[in-house]
Image (cartoon, rainbow, N blue to C red):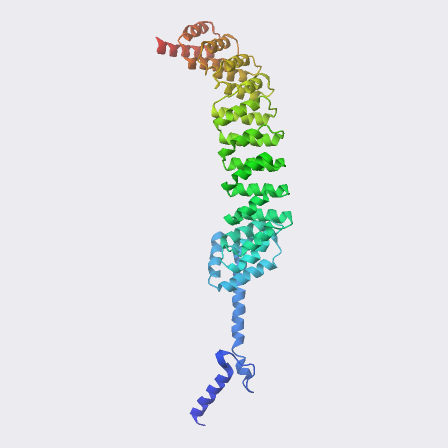
Length: 432
């Protein structure tokens, strides 16, 4: 046979097997079927091997406890076709029923910028399981894609309140300016939980454009829990323009509303709050609230209207509050406060008497000085007499020298006598 004829025959055979555009024809001449079957089988096996390798690596990523080892598996995964890897993650996500594993899968999917993940992950924003919702929101935040927008709008417009709450939760991760009107509209939602979630979301995202609405909710919402959430958000965002609102709700009939207002006012420590707080102390009956308000006045070193502080120092059953009130009265400088402090020297609690002595040292006048010497003359505890002696030294009046010397000559307590001796030496050095 002519060799050239053989070459022609082989060429015809190849053309018939491959067909146009490289495709194998569905019908081949008799005798060639076995030859045609040789190509696809190894190719199919190779594809199956790749899928198995990807699946094994995905399992290794999820099960690895050491972070460095996990990153090595992830690096190997990135050498495979992204489409195949993404399909494997999606398939595993759909097939897994275990909550913890589902969360880990979603967390790993967030490391890929695969837009195919957006819609499947978006469905988990309304999962009944909080960890899954959070993980899906975090993942979608990383991937970022506007195809999510209709899904989010569907949640906010849902007739199911819990879906509206899930929308608000998602906003903690996915918020952008386009969703602001939807959030604000939900402040008028009939469901109080929805309104509370909105306020917390506005606070967490520090959305200052919402401050006016927060003030309105703090003053006028029909539910006290919502008002408390609004006051908390005002404090978190340090809304200085809301002081008037906080002062108003400081007299609210609901104890928890008043307490939250007092707490937030303590964060601001504004001199503008001195008068409203001091007025409220005159009628407030809750010890926690009184402690917060007195603490604010102490931080500001102002007493305001002293009637409330005087009432607490002289009549309150809580000794800690009496001590704090005596301390703040020392900042007043008024004759009324001085007279109240003099009456406080009769308190049954030695700690209150000592704090009164400390506050009297701020007045630096003869009346305060005379009161302190009365304490030294009494056989009170050294703790109280020491506070009185320290205040006398602070007042620093030259006329005190002879009084201290007289006390020294009569003092029987060796410890306090030594304290008097040191004070006298200081006066001698200073004035003689």
